[in-house]
Each structure stands twice: as structure tokens, then as C-alpha cells.
Image (spheres, rainbow, N blue to C red):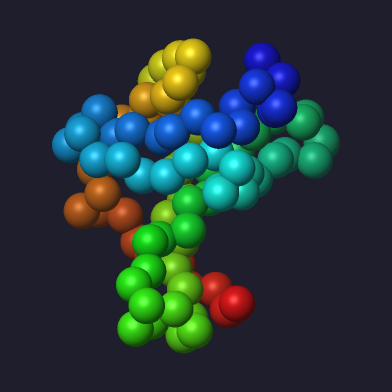
Length: 89
């Protein structure tokens, strides 16, 4: 599958049914030596109050991707055990 074919697909967590984000609004970490995707990096949704402060993002390991469909990407992660990482705008 080409990277362009992933654009616009929504990421759904099968663990709890949560909608996590959309490819295109997310980043991907790529192994520069092999060219393989290592993880999907999803910005955490913010409200207007904390729009200009440090944002957070969730890193989904590529191993957590269970199925790539025509419209969605299914992942299986326990979000309660994830650490959100901060990054500046």
C-alpha cells in the first residue's frame, strides 16, 4: 500500500471504539533505513482554551495496526496505558 492511499482514512481503536484521528492530520514515523512505518503520531484534540499552549500527541506503534480498510484503519491499543507527549506549536 502506498502512503497516498492512507490519506483521509479515519483511525479507530477496536479496544474501546474511540475515533482517534485521520491520516493526513497525523504524522508518521518512518525508519529511514528500511522505509517501513514505525508509528502513527496523532495530535490530541484540543479545545479553544488550550489551543495556544503546548499540545500533546499520541504515538501509535505500527504493530498496533490490525486492519487497513477502504475508509478506516483499525488499531488495538489500551489508551489508559499510553503516555501523551508534549510538543510546541
